[in-house]
Image (cartoon, rainbow, N blue to C red; front, side, top):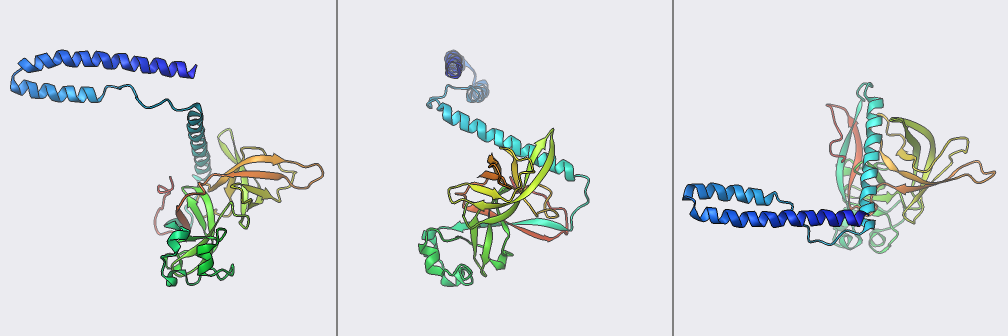
Length: 298
């Protein structure tokens, strides 16, 4: 049914383009006999008219899977907008916080690129994990290196964001660089809070400990089964209150199982942030001097 509609649409576009070409040929005869001044104005109008014609697309039809993926991406985007609006409405009556968020842009430095860094750029990183500059270059499972350090305000446990999505956090800082651990790393730990939207209102639920699973996903531990948990619940960063009113999103619940006799849920999470992203934002809090918005977190 979808393919038939798309074919019909293209046939209509082709007929319209044919009629347009016939009209252009007819007008061309008029232009040849028109005075110079009138001919110039008519040519300009025709060019604008032709540019607005929806010419048939010669590109191949997108597969159904691509259309489904685009629709799913749009749906997730709309759901996140609803989440942000619900959170903003909840906090709209609160007075301004003493703190304001500041974002410092950072890049992930790839293993190949690290070879060209000055050794001074790596001073102060790697000691906590007992890894040196050589390991940072050679080990595939070494923490990620980002090109911002304490000279730009970076410090341990600061969150790294892609938009409003939590990508990971800083685990060690040097003067000019820092080590970062993505949320999918099996050594990652972070306190999170489950939440859901009910009739347009944000309902925050239980807290738990998020861990990476090294397979591109995460899991949440220590959520007691006395709490309600469901697939598609939001997983939000906990502890950012007073710094930002908008929720920082880890992802969505993809699995919620209650094993008989077990005191805690088994919860799987799909990360919201693109784990292949190389451009990140370090979330830093500073004393509020003026109103600071989140326009850059798109």
